[in-house]
Amino acid sequence: MRNLPKYTVRFFSVPLLICLLFGFASPSAEAQSSQGLGSSEDKGIRLTINSYSIVNHGQNIQLHYTIQSNSNIQVNPDTTSLVENPHIWIGHTLVREQSESFKKVSNNVYKGTITAQLQHYRPDNSEMSIHTHGLLHQKGQWTVKFLLRTDKY
Image (cartoon, rainbow, N blue to C red; front, top):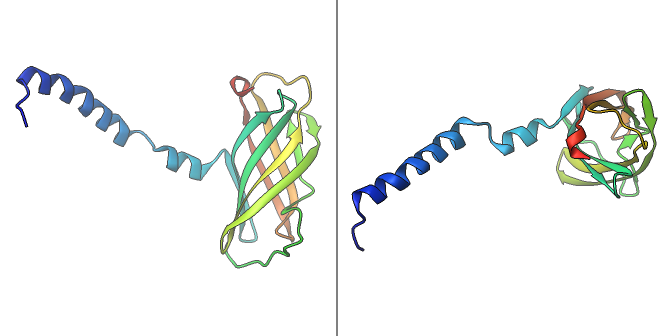
């Protein structure tokens, strides 16, 4: 292996050091994604909205969620929805849920996506909320609020 000149080592070591410092000092993407946009817990069941995406040329929103339970709750394989009758609000406007898909990722954890219609007019940086009275066929109260950022759509 040939020896590199001192100035080359110094030149490349400074950016490497900066990358390492900022990489370890800033919160990791993994830590941010585990917290999600917001969460709510009731009766040992936590609903977390991890992220959202605007699809279908701005006509729909997909809410990506995680449901985590302290106990092992059995879900019927024929179940089509884990989030019972969700009320999804953008500002003061109720939007309609169109579909939900989910999968079990471990004993007490489910991940899924709710697709809902977006209204045509959305104010800049609206507050969005999702509210439900039932998760995993258990009764309770779950409300998650977060900001729907204009730069995402």
